[in-house]
Image 1 (cartoon, rainbow, N blue to C red):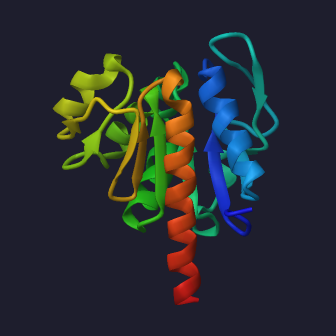
Image 2: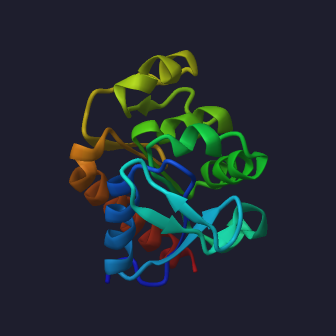
Amino acid sequence: MKLKGLKIIYLIGEGFEDLEFYVPLMRLREEGAEVVVAGAKANQTYIGKNGLQGKSEVSFEDLDPANYDAIVIPGGWAPDKLRRYDAVKKMTRWFYENNKIVAMICHAGLVGISAGIVRGHEATGSEGIKDDLLNAGATWRDEAAFRSGNIVWGRVVADIPDFCRELVNALEEYSQKVNKKG
């Protein structure tokens, strides 16, 4: 229960990558984190790229990021749509600017680009967004998972175990820092 007491916003949208959504979500809950799934509307069912369903618990608009410790953005086709919501961009930028954890895997870097937080960072994701990340001022790193500042990056579905390890470690370190201050 390394993450007991942490509260995490977990984004969902139509066309999410099924495994990138469910595996880290289950891993975070397994470690005791309180995870809330947020979508454009509360209690809306979304269909993943491979047919799995996921349901939002709250809407982006109803969240106050100050009540949470991290935001996780799975990949798939959803990030290209999620980044069009001002609330998503604002929330992602808020976590970044307040030195809280922002985690993105695969195509989720599109949200980071639109939120204006990738410039000057090492970044990874699906090869399909490499040019987008480079053009946004990031440095491409072809590696399964790593941290660059308070951003946790994951490359693709095959790298989910590495992404989960990096994410849990980042959140555990964040929790230790926060608890020392409090």
